[in-house]
Image (cartoon, rainbow, N blue to C red; front, top):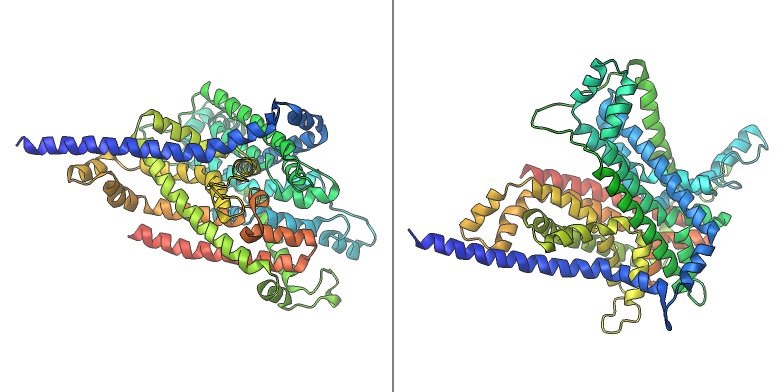
Length: 564
């Protein structure tokens, strides 16, 4: 009876050694992915041929107008998107608004429509001179001038908030579902009104989700390129991301000044992350205990149509109008609001399919990058999540902290660091290939996969893995036979989201692409700069069709995976 324990103990010792090797290997990979480009941005901003220099930062700080524009867009987008997403979450999670289940799914649709396409569509709708809304108003009301002008700071903020509102909606909705309604009922019993109970109980307990979503939106909007490029640059409104793009596309490229802007964005986001952590450490937000509960809906009575109208109005502005405008522009011969001059055909689709030289190359590159990005992140993220959840060593803590850092790094800053790190690196010729885009995508989207898969791993009891190890399975055998099958539904959902996000990415692509590595988002932006409106719309509609087709296909695969 003594032999089996000795064999099993040896097996566990070998398993522990494998775990340490896996953790160290993952730490080395993630360190190179995340820390090297960050160090490159810092070095590029403060170093030159003579050593240490702050000239680049001085030039950046002297650009007060661009800094002000960047903060205005960041703060405005954060307030509007977080407020809008929070209101939508309260309406659809805590009230008896009609059609809540279907509307929750529809509210998430802007996640699958790239902000570039939303900005292009609203540019056609809200341009001060030739915008369709202004032309329509003039045809009905006469010469009334421009009633809508989205080529402005307000337009950039509004369209960016429409695109980012689903992010706070997801986080706040999750917090509201996990909240014990008896806490609100206790406030009501003590005489508080519904509004007072919400303000004093619900809102403070949802503070982590609100702060987390606000930080996420702020970081994303600080480094946002597509919306300010489409709606801001034509009006002379520049932010940090478009300024970086302008500096790198000037002749000669002003890389040091661009790195200075990148360092400034890094410092701002680091301060915000530290501030958020300090705020959350001072309070307790525990709402789930051992006592079972079921969230209760608030009956809003006559307000139901009003709340339903708020949700439908958001869907109209964020989904229906942009998609309908793109489809209309792709089919009409030229942009006009006069029905007598309108004629529809498929010539623009024919052009982008058979004549436009970048379509086939960009489609192939985008699909390849989407497949590789989603697969690499799911593989890497699952291994990282297992180490983080099951281990307690320094490598696990390093993976947890550094693996989530890209969430607080604007993608254009990450791309700038990769550009500085790998351009001219002859022994590792990544620049100019799809490889550097893949590295940028995997690094930027890694936190999404890591957080989702960490939650899935935490739901698995360690006894399942221990049983496999007792039966003689090694570490990788346990991961393959136990962890992988049990986390398959989460893997499929995560893979789908990452694939779609990769198809949409432009903020880092616009800095890292070359002619052979053009992707769909860059091809769309090139058509925008060239003024080829109808071809742009046709290519955008094709991109949307591919995105939604992928959603349908993967949703069916996910159902089969769950059923299995």
